[in-house]
Image (cartoon, rainbow over all chains, first blue to last red; front, side, top):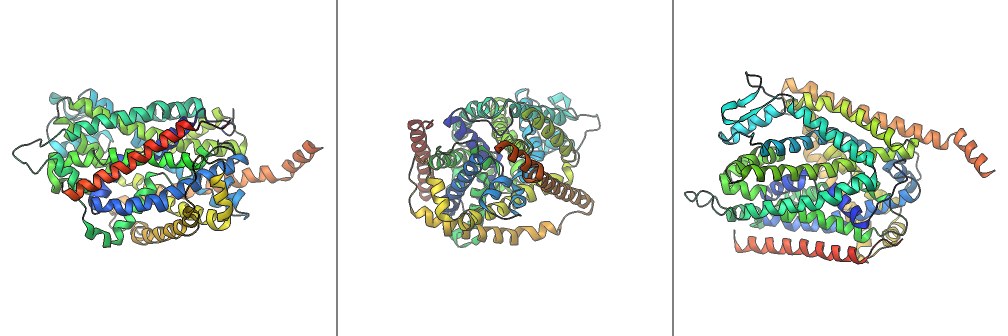
Length: 535
Length: 34
């Protein structure tokens, strides 16, 4: 069967798959870091305002655009934009909605495989038992193949902390294989099944970890200020002076945008399998609410409060500044090592991250499959084989050049900057080209809830203006220094340039494929076939 | 954790969990139309 002619099995399955697409590593790692470093409880004010004015409206826009395109035979963004915007460049602008999921899948699958690998390593007690953060940092680097012990293995065999080179590669192959298998099983037989079992498991694991963290109390009575209460205070105590800082508002809006997987192209594809009568208003709101529960309630209660309870506020601030991956893969294992049954809690933590990861990477893969089905009539098995081969080849530099920021470069342009670009474009097209009256009736079609009418005004003016301001401000603050490689060591630059060449080549390849797909669809042969069919 | 911190936590958790439960109930009461 082609990937374009399938259907979701159940409504709850679709909502869980959409929520699985949105719930990712960022919910558990990025959110608490952002909240703690941007005014704590005060961060929640711009955060929730952004959810109401940016997140939920954009969610409705993407769901309704996906359904609109799917009903007309186009599930991926080139076809959707071509349907709403009568311009020759519309389909090429829509290429961003395939390019970004593809590039992100190339590195995300690898990171996802670390979670699986670390989950098993935790069960088998392979983490270093002593040495703290520094030793665990070496362990992570050894796992990634970025450093090697002289014995050919990393670590101290006597304490059971050692690791074979190539282990990460094995887990990567398994993870990619699992992704391809579920994609091959199809929409309701693969993706929906993973969501139906995976999301409840993820929530269960998160609740177990939350309870464990909340009952930590004061792990070291000699240092009473390092307690779980101060950990929660680090995230929630409001510093109202932060509200006068535009950076805090920008960080909150950016977090809402990333956490809901907006501007990516994957929500459109999942929604494209709906029929014209199916609701998008309640489903879109449910997806947002489920994601927010995973983020605000669970994500905010595990990593950072636990880090404060063990290392204190000052050290946690430093650890958080080291980035989300360090918090998840270095700090957390060290914390679990100090708890009774720590190996088990560590395994739960990493398996939770793995589920969060795979439900997102499946959405990325499905975007490419849907494009190949729509554009070239490719069968699912052929499309999965092609996707698997290309992703496998393109991930090799990510694996080999991990210490040269190759992955960071892909993450910045395709996984961050690109989302803002595409988000801004689609909201403008929806409100001002497709037209707010048509757009609003599209959202209301088959709706199980009546969104307040004020949202028509918000969708027409507030969301587009907010999106443009965020895009420009964020780009101004972040893009020039990254583009000019400021502060990047000389030896790293060739790898960064290599990553840029790869992204440009991928985008050019998608432009070419779109051109070919439209030529086949609209060319003389297609018209002849259409005339013959009518005759 | 200050009193203001607790107020922020309870308000955020209550709002989000409340909205999620309301959505779940509405979804369960509205199956597919076909």
